Amino acid sequence: MRTPAPGAKKALEQVLEHSDFVIVMAKAGMRILEHLYGRYSDRIRYIPHGCPNVPFIGTAMMKQSLGLKDRLVISTFGLLSRGKGIEYAIQALPQTLREHPEILYLVIGETHPEVRKREGEAYREFLLNQAETLGVEKNVRFVNRFLRENELISYLQATDIYIVPYPNREQVSSGTLSYALSTGKAIITTPFLHAEEVISAGAALRSEFKDPRSIAEALDILINDDQIREKYSRTAYEYSRAMIWPSVAMRYVNAFYHILGL
Image (cartoon, rainbow, N blue to C red; front, side, top):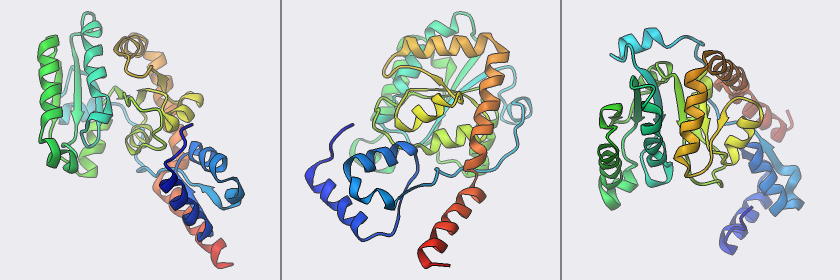
């Protein structure tokens, strides 16, 4: 567990000192704050990252509507930046494509606006060049725009396997992981702090950091055994039920009422 910079530690200590509650969106966040600021542990509350409440459905109808029929769809979404580890997922494809040439890996989302200001589309171009060098450019498709929520959910519902290849263990919460859980995806993820909880609950399959071979091995498990893939999908969906927006909203309402003494 990393120690924060002195300035950051002091700032958060002041936040805790002047707050009735501080909300964290992953249980790992509670452990970190309790470790660093033990005397304020009674002020730390966990409320999960919210997610939409959508039905658990098969992929066929959404694949048809998106022109993805007969493809085995893998996806990752989010604002594109170098910290997402998408290059490792692309590097995993050649091994898997030998047996499954029908795979299509969708990289969904525009480049992060702040990243675009600094370096333009350099990371996306790097990923495109990497796919071409590896000979998988026909199996990687970039959806280069910010999707409305209903569009995003449609792409997720068309997805067979969702990959979260983050290279940084210290990430405490992930909205993309929450959305993948809420749509009942079979998920492959590196064990960053939020994902460790999901993996421990049996709601996602673990891959190692910066390790394309590990991602490929996890893909083989999920692609080659429909029952295992279905098990992870259903467990992910069940895990997400406590995270849907109405449940999360009510937990915030209850916290506010407690603070107000109502």
